[in-house]
Amino acid sequence: MMPHVMEAMEEDFTVHRLWEAEDRDALLAEVGERVRAVGTSGNLGASAALMDALPNLEIVGCYGVGVDSIDLQHAAKRKVIVTNTPDVLNDDVANMAIALLLATSRRICVGDRYVRDGKWLKAAMPLTHSIRGKQLGILGLGRIGKDIAEKASAFGLELSYHGRRKQDDVSYRFFDNLVEMAENCDYLVAICPGGEATNNIVNRAVMDALGPEGVLINVARGTVVDEAELVLALQEGRLGGAGLDVFLEEPKVPEALFEMDQVVLQPHAASATVETRHAMGDLVVKNLRAHFAGQPVLTPVR
Ligand code: NDP
Image (cartoon, rainbow, N blue to C red):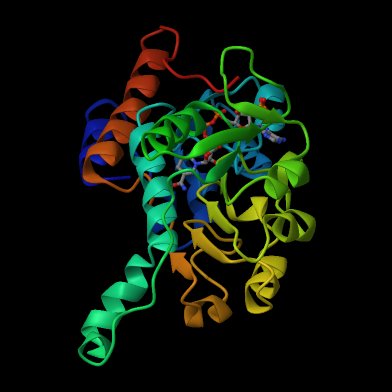
């Protein structure tokens, strides 16, 4: 949590810092019975074991919108409320998706290195590709996916999407089959939730359908893409490029990707702006305060 969020929490609550404890089990044994709320992040989550170490737990406030690392079933069983931080991060996460799309298609990082390494003094950089008129498929047309779609439309991209169901209130083309959508795409942006249902949903067949000119952008979760297959597809030229904000074992990233000019990497930073992180932190605190004031929480995960 950002310092100002911790300060806000400490105004109203006694805060125990589990992540700083040398012996976490000892801290849980000491204070577990008194703990009524957990503040956590999308990365750290909250396991069933953690919840069970806190018999009087009422609420888990997640600093992030993705809750795949929180055991929601167990929380429901224990009647623990879970909140997250939807919407306040849409704009920045969508911007990161668009930034990765432009960075890969226009080879922004390659161009930057080209200038710094003095290569421009010897020859012009090879031409890149424009995005206007190209097909963009969105895997997960939710809150953030819709924001990406709106921004991508302004860049002149043609939109389609894949999800578990067709949405009646949008005009973009719907594919009920992800491979089929990938066959029809130049760019595929993954922005669906992580977790079991989407584990490796972007598999070899999807990457091959996207093809040697195709580019995969992943701002969803590392688990959504078969990472070993992704490395292979890029190495073998079966996939044209990738813009990746998320990885399977963060902060570890497959080193094979470091050498690839057709890949742009980010350290899970899509929502990591001062403004958005402030808004997310404020929402975590507002949810906790509402709950302990006996009011309904603002953004429950249902
Ligand atoms: P929403 O719940 O609003 O949207 C999720 C979308 O994914 C829905 O359109 C849903 O459509 C689709 N979806 C859900 N399950 C499946 C499935 N099994 N197969 C295909 N599509 C599916 O979430 P948000 O837009 O707010 O956030 C989406 C995700 O983005 C988060 O869960 C998080 O993992 C990730 N994220 C990453 C960030 C980063 O820093 N890189 C920051 C913020 C979010 P339907 O119901 O029709 O299937």
